[in-house]
Structures are given as structure tokens and as C-alpha cells.
Figure 1: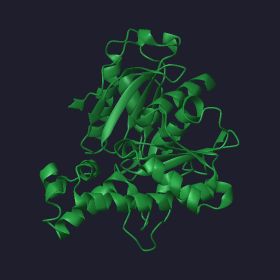
Figure 2: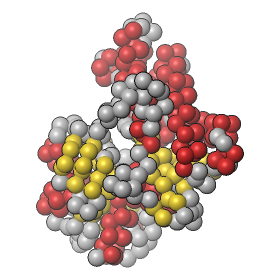
Figure 3: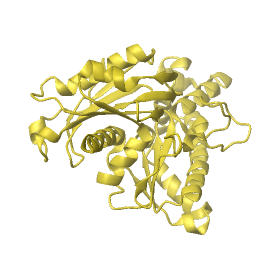
Figure 4: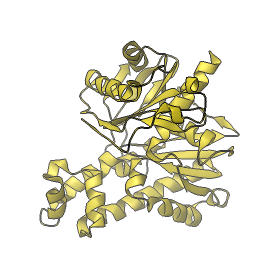
Length: 336
């Protein structure tokens, strides 16, 4: 069952031409959100959050279609183009998911399968790249020629605009900073590497570290277990909520996460030298102090050319990837 976040608005409220509405879909490791987006980046109808069980492509795509239809069922004229953002390495030419570590997918023809269900051309894009497009064209990075978008959610991702161009990389995977090494010989990531940024700061990794801490100290982890209902059910959200309630163990995990995050943010700023670093994703929404953590670390620890980066929160928040997917699809339609 979906969990709704606010009331969907009618497409008649669009500030642009209703015929230019594009459906954007954000497929994450645990949820799907869809929205009809106008040419100015305004979301004029929203599906709310639909949760999926990560039970393979068939079940997840069924949830994607449910989410999309929550936006389209009362629309007289369906959009001519659909954009899908997904936490994965993507071949945008074919709409194929090459590798989605947190979904456990390889070589899934996502674009073709959604097009068959919804009857409109589909553009598929990496979620961090989609969010970057949204923030660059309509959000916190509008008018900026050199920026980096750092996505903090179940995983950690990113993408960059350099000299006014969105960079792609040789196999369309530029900016995968979640898999830079921040701890030599560290924790196993969902990718083939150890010690990755994501393996300490991604939502799945925070949950994993918390569960280990509770098992090592059941008395100290009592509040986490009580809030989640079971040790195995502890999530990053459980940790953040319990820390806000004053629990010492949860607060320790959050402080450790902030230190790992600071290490990664400094590495990103030094490596990419953005004039603006934009932070977004569900983890930032759940723990806004990460913005100040990044800014403080960059000012104190980066080499001088990188230390002056402006650090800002994404304008579109958790909807950035959805809005960006719609924008990518709109641009693709115009090219065609």
C-alpha cells in the first residue's frame, strides 16, 4: 500500500502548457514516487510514496506502474513522454539497467517494460544524474556552471555539471562517489569494493551498523529495538528518530555517521572543485544537520581552491530525482 504525502493537485494548476506535462518517476531501493511535471519544474500532481518489497523486477515494476497510474488515472490526456530515475548504472540509449546494487538487478530492460505497461516512450536515467538536472535547470543550482549534486539516501550517489555541461563518463556512470574508498580495508559495500563512502553513510549501511551495535550491546540498544519492534527491523530512520529522543547509542551512531560523511564530502569537494555543492535525498531530509557538517568540514579541511564551495540543500528535496527524470524525458522528446 502506498503512503501518501499530501494531496495530489490537478494538472489544471500547471503554470505551463498542459500538453507539455511529463511524467517523472523516481524508483529507489525501497520506494517509488511519481509526478506530473510542467516545463518550469513544478510538480502539478504527485502520487505520494509507494513502497515496494524489492522482490525482483516483476514485483517492483508492478509498484512503479501503480505509482504512475496514481498520477494518470484522472488525466484526460496522458503525457507524451515518461522519465524514470533509478538508483543504478544505466544505459540511457536502451533504457536498460546495467547494474543496480541496492535492487540486486543486472541487465533489466526497464524502459521497454514500463513503456509496454504505460504506452508512452520512456527515458531512463541514473537518479543522481536526474536530480542534478532538476537542481541545475530549476533549483538550487540554477544559473551555476560548475556544481556537484550529492545524493544521500539508501545509497550515496552524485553527478556534476562542469563548464555548463552535465558530464556522463565513458559508460554513463560519472560521479559515482558513493563508491570512493574512505576507510582502507573497511566495511563490505553492496558493490565489489570495501570501505566505500556508501558503506558507512548510505541508509542501508547506517541500519547495518546499528543492528550490529544492538546485538553487541542489547541493553544499550533497547530503545532502538523497542522502536523498531525487532533488531532485524532497525533502519536508518529508526536510528535518527531514537537519537532525537536522546538515546545514547543511537546518538553515537549518528555522530559516527557525521564523521564518515565529513570525510566523503571533503573528498568530493577536493576532487570536483564545484562552486556549489548541493545536498539532497532522504537522509538529509531525516537529518538536516548534515548540511552544516559538510560546510564546516569543507571550510576547515579542503585545499584552498575547493574550500570556498557554496553548500546548499536541494530545492526539490526528495522529489529532485523525479523532477529531473521528467526534465530529461522532456529534453529527449524535443531532440526527437
